[in-house]
Image (cartoon, rainbow, N blue to C red; front, top):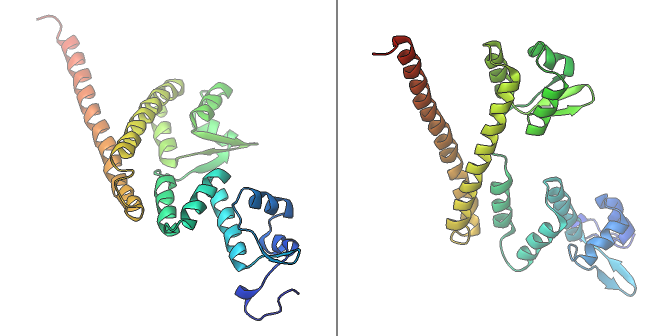
Length: 244
């Protein structure tokens, strides 16, 4: 061994040993060095020696890749760290921004079980539309619906007499409206918060905004439903009463 010491943090590795310890191929390690994601090794003659800090850096890179970051984004994060910014704060902002707002529980079943929930209505076209909307993911004969609550609600609506195709059409329009509303909310955050709050506080601020944003949407939709239902009922009663 190059460094026969008892403390693992003092151990140093050749590039092949680093690849074995980290599980990252040598070719990838060299690429990370070229992109300045990985600091250069300590040189002893022509031999490059890597430390436990390199191993930790590789673990961080792997974790960020698993969370959906690009290599360029990771490079910028690490650059901020090296420039003296608190990496916990930087990652705190990243966590707050990328943590899913949805807390729905997905449900997986066979395609046959899904179609049985909607007798005669969940054909290939409807399944394809649900996949396009992001409601379903198909893996062989298994399908996963992103939300058990939404699936249960859809089943209830269809069993009440509303065709599944109509429910999917409304869902498409609703999703478009929600996307527009979410985009406006993000613009508000970008315009009024980014750059004005310290990195360490930004994640906490966004976390505090989450429930308020969700309640506003839910309450606003419920109020809109109250108005629309009342208007529909008044119209029906007016038709029943006939001309004055």
